[in-house]
Amino acid sequence: MELRVTDGLDMSNRDRVGLDIQGLREQIEAMRPGDVAWQEMPMAQKCRVLIIERIQMEQQKAAAKAK
Image (tube, rainbow, N blue to C red; front, top):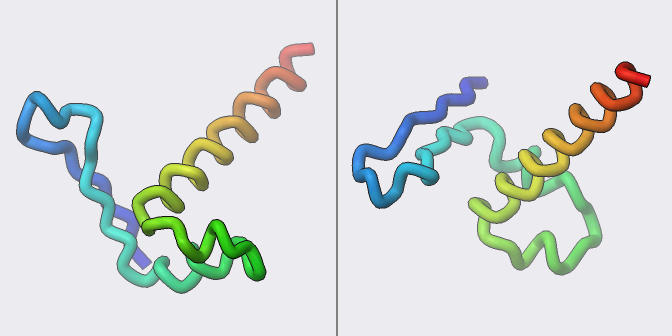
């Protein structure tokens, strides 16, 4: 299973990246069984949601450690 991120070449798209999800699609789809909204979301949006959630988890862990 390989996770590869590549930077976009066009400066107007500098906040966009290509993401190779080979071997991960089924796991991503299965993250929220029974959630109709999740099933209807495009894969790019699902990836973005999962990344944001993970960032928030790590920030919360760091904040708890700092206390």
